[in-house]
Image (cartoon, rainbow, N blue to C red):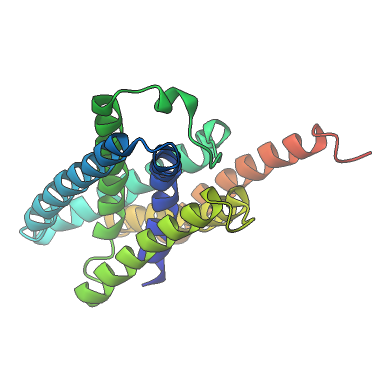
Length: 235
């Protein structure tokens, strides 16, 4: 159950990098009403994501035969595309600042509530899709436990860094998680192709893994190497 833990750790860091610095700032400045709005919004987003996720799980469980295979294959390809988009194509837009964003600070209580609700809902729904692929691979209790542990670990990491208790470089942590996630995306893509076309194309799984992993790692490492060369660190 390492995959659900890693996925929840990564997505959790994205969530808490927005929410926890805000809460730390609000508490430091005794804006407890704003903190309450953030907490309530987070709870609402989590609740809605849980309900939607439960509905998705219950409906998927009803699929059997060709319909189930078609869903599994398409889900694998969709998740692979999601990983490619969020990990490779959007990496240049990611912010890893553990201080509260001034744009968010200026929001009203209602704005903070909506921001927290949307953040939790969007990321947790994404987590649900990833976990869905592992639902039949093991003990559901272990699956849920590893997912919750991943989210809790993400919250702890962001909290200790935001409070200045640790000098952990979140960018490095996130980078390593992205490397793992690309590999997982390659597996999903290969598995999806194998489910859909394995009867007609031999070695669909291996072909899918290579077609996905090689370009993705190339784009990721190319961008990072370019930034490193232009950063002035090399003299």
